Length: 307
Image 1 (cartoon, rainbow, N blue to C red):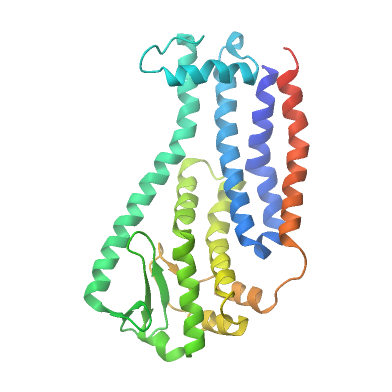
Image 2: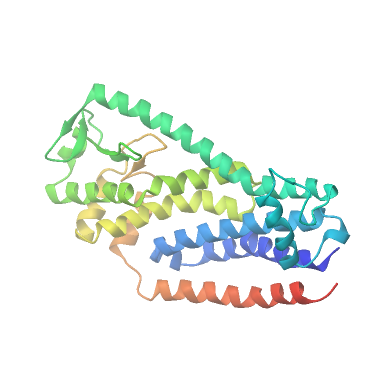
């Protein structure tokens, strides 16, 4: 086997198995949810790119398996001139199946993300039509109000986003608590958190249930809720937000929406009321830097050694 396949294999293994397990056992992701979301996104991107590169190097004939720099120099001009001369720039016809597999590994997650985004958009449109029939716009709340005894507050994200409140929530919450819950939902809309949850869900259909995919599917929905909590806390007290979350925890909302309550409410209430001390952002950055410093020498050594 060509030794140049080692760097992408190492990166794919690190991003797909080793680092996700380490992150799931760490405390800093819940202390710094936005940094954790960025880290999970970076791990997914590295895993997809490394898997594609590893497949390309494994499937190419050995005589075509050159240094990564030479491979990029050969493939990029081919990609740019594919419609004119697909066999130019040193790409042989025998190399095309390997390139097709590598491109499929890159494009499949994007295609499944697009499919999942279209599906959830259709659900949002149908739900919005239903809300127009059973709910009414409440200017004082800047939200849609509907009759239901169970306290529930959630948002319908997307192009025509809106926050939805049940009459049960109005009766259960004080003015301060209601304002905190509304700020939480508007944080979801402002942060476009639905795109992250759609991406996490689409990844579960792209690859087998490796540690990275399993943990992204479970962690991203929780982290976006924590990120919305942190943004809401900029303008409300911890007690108000925690009480609001506790009050609407039993409220039901469509699975594709983002609810202020939900199954993660108890964990988030404990996090809000008992914030951990320390420097989570610094710890996360140092962890990422240590991983980069450990992987870079391996990649450079394998790419520069003649074989």
